[in-house]
Amino acid sequence: MERTAAITQAPGGKDEPAGAPSGGRNRGEPPDVRLSGVRKTYGDVVAVGGIDLEVKRGEFFTLLGPSGSGKTTTLRMIAGFEDPDAGGVELAGRDVTGIPPYDREVNTVFQDYALFPHMTVGDNVQYGMRVQRVGKDERRRRASEALDMVRLSGYETRKPSELSGGQRQRVALARAIVNRPRVLLLDEPLGALDLKLREQMQVELKGIQGEVRITFIYVTHDQDEALTMSDRIAVFNGGRVEQVGRPAEVYEQPANDFVTGFVGASNLLERDGARITVRPEKIRLLEGADDGSGLHTERGVIRNVAYAGMITRYLVDLDAGGEVLVVRQNLETSSTEALEQRGRQVTVGWRPEHSVAVTEETRREDSQ
Image (cartoon, rainbow, N blue to C red; front, side, top):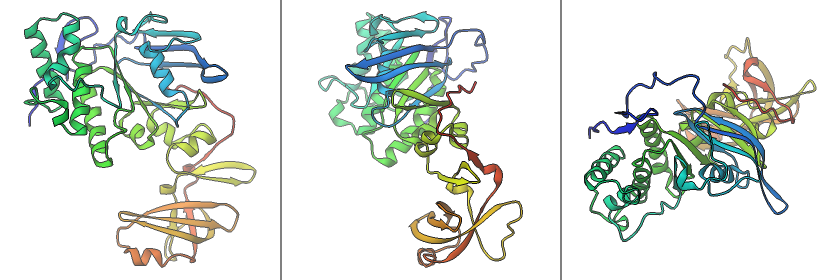
């Protein structure tokens, strides 16, 4: 189905096609979101411990971390649902610390959708505009554009109970973007969906964000989700930001042990007094005829094998100490052949540049 070009409001107030190039942005303009020394405690518990973050105009920025790491509390302070105990929150250069949510240019999409069950899809999408006293014709036009963008044209008269989980999530997204916020906050919005639908919605969310050119700040504990959709990622742990960077930087060059272990699978080894990490897909199982020149090689024994369809995971105990997980594509290997490798002596190898030194000390470097 071909989408019609939706209209969004440019920073200067002029309507532009949502898919229009964004090259006219002023490089000197302030970030859409700036957190300066933001801290939040609940009794003796430090939920957010004095973090600094900047989110640029038009970014898809993800707050990634385990439960209790402070990412949702940070999102709620940006939204205005919580006030920081210390520090400040700025939106597009305006200090909004202490200002209520309805006076901020933000909207929030929650995991539970929060749709009104007695209203139709069209009325749900138009609700915020009715509160703002937008005219009826303008409400219908903008609601129609928003529903078209999330591929729900023709669903205006249905009730939320008549929709699937993925469709309800799209309605919640349409209701959020129709008000043209400067920043859209998304608190684990795909968490209730099954795996297939979640993966489909990841691609669609990223595409919609590119069309509407609204800054998205996305909260998740799912590393694959963060790596798939984000322009940049802030990795949270214990109320602190451990690393900020583009997905490839966070994955390929983790700042410390926590990021190494949390973002994707990784192998942590101690060699020559240094701690190094190597990703499983970077390690090769070498056959007798394979050329190992240019590789760091070690001998070991395959302790366990897990056949997973497209790939097989091999856990290898190394003679020099430690273990590595090796991921290999099943280009020509059957499940029987893969499982027969258990207990076999093998040589593993990886390119030296694919091993990254890591430390226990946290480095907080914002990759610009």
